[in-house]
Figure (cartoon, rainbow, N blue to C red):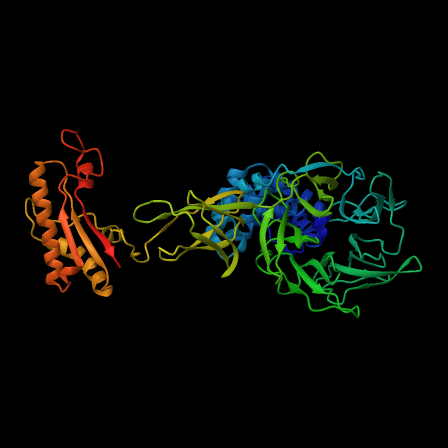
Length: 640
């Protein structure tokens, strides 16, 4: 029955070849356009069983089952449509076929169809969402296992759905009233019209809500104000015994309002922004009761039904309805909103990546009204069928939702639940801060976390160079590092939409040489040795490049004095190495003096192999790399 309120689609009659079947198809087409889908299905299927094939026939059969949530049958007939290999299949059928396959447990085949859908309709937000969330099943799995769920105990063999709790009573819609003398069935679903019912929260005794709110057509989705004096609810376009119809003579649905006067519901009227030509349904109040959220296909909607909000003014008037935007609304159906005191909005959607049919999602309402961090609540609630009308008490974490999942008593059933663990996709952003050249860790580095150029958190890298921040899934951040000896660096990162950890190591480049007595300018500039030709002490061009760095420091810091030290490895004789290293030291000093440095600022000598930095002394077998460590030049600061 929910689909009567959810689906707002009219499809034209098709022409069909075959005189013998023409009258049947015309009859079925009439029923189809009047939303009498049950009657249409019977006729269409008899035609198909006789071997007749038509693109329009299979489309209508698929749609008739799809809009009644008979997904296995819908997948069958959409499959026949796709088997015809026609180029005329609209992109919408790719999505419906994929949804039907998922709802039938054929996820792998569904994803293949979604890939085709994405290639054909890249501008469709559902295609984009699928493309951006290829691992959506992993996310759903990660969000599962958080509920204890049981039958609410108030279900019948008919459709029961949509709940609201007020003063320890549960209010909901049910099609269980079959009538005393006449059977008022809706042709679309073959079920009876729904009225509002109530029961004590802890009782299975259900009574019909015997008020003027119930009519001979559909009522659903009541929501009461905290004082109990006002109720908003969904009803067919019907008031004072008269049906309202759109331009195509179809009676849609509207949100109505009633007030309690002397214990009677009176002043029943449609909200002023409702219309005969589009539907408004499933009202939900914000905790402060200043905003009404609802679903509608009004002009300007993105999809088949979108979520909207409208302000409730102090004089009981209303503002202009505002679409909640593309962050939440898709080309599919978004419906059954529910808003909590924690600024969360729960809703049902078949446009966001899910398990098939309608799934329940939750999103955050930001302080500026934007919607962010949309997540599927998991497989405990969601199934391959339709799951919707989710409400929750944010304190007790108890609530209700509706579903036509397998194992129920009727076409739709109400389930109650306890959420044992709040859905909060939590990520840890972490890493180690190191020197880009030497790879040594840099404890004490300040690390700052930014979101949209606003500081969200800061920390100091630990003794191991490690830092970490708690962050939100799916968001973008910037991480800035500040170290007095290094260039400030900022790195952008996008956090995945799954619980876990995101590693972001950051390597810093030295900002400038820190001049301290005893410090080595060679290390500051990464100079390991000054290159000379074999057995020679002449300055080579490669060496001059590094010596210019030393020269500039001495020119810009005229008080700095250096002691220049040259070293060799242990190969060759002790005396030879001592003489050679000394000559090379003198060549360096001579080069610096020749380029303008006062010789009084420079001292130095060669140390040969007397100050090895490793084990590679005479007679010890070492690699060339180990010998290289000993062949080095040092420029030790002796005065500043």
